Image (cartoon, rainbow, N blue to C red; front, side, top):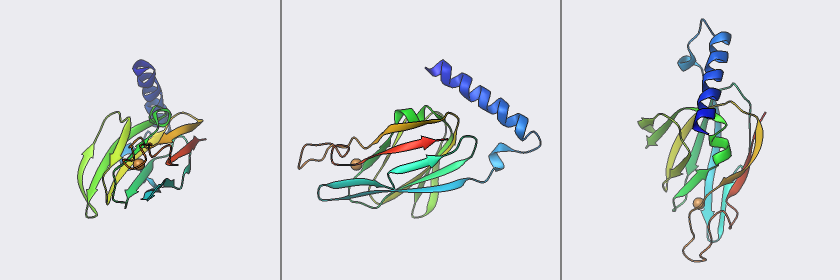
Length: 154
Ligand SMILES: [Cu+2]
C-alpha cells in the first residue's frame, strides 16, 4: 500500500510539473474548506458532513473544534487519496507548527483549529469519515452518535 501511494504521489508530482513547469507548487493559493466539529449532550456531528473536492487543486481544510471535547477527523480512504502538503496547527489564530509527511488522521482538541493542506490525487466517494472518541456517558463512540460523513473527490 505504501509503495502504491508512493507511485501515485510520484505520478502526481510529474503531472504537476508538466502543467506548471514555470511555476512553484509551494506558491499555489489554497481553496479554503471549513468543517466544524460540533457536540452537545448526545449529539455529535461534523458540519458540513458532506465534503466535495476535486483532484489537482490545493485545499486548506480548516477543521474547527469549538466544543468542550476532543474529536478526530478520520477517514483512511480520504487520507490515501490525497497528497498532504502539510498540517498547520494554530493557537489563538496564529500558526505555531507545521507537520509534514503522510498523515492518516487528525485529532483536534477543544477550542482549537488545525489546517490540513491537501491535493486530492484519486477520485472516489469515501464514506468512512468519522470520529472514534468514546462518549463516557453513553459508552458509544461519537461515530455511533452521528459524527460521521462522506468525502467525495471528482
Ligand atoms: Cu468526536
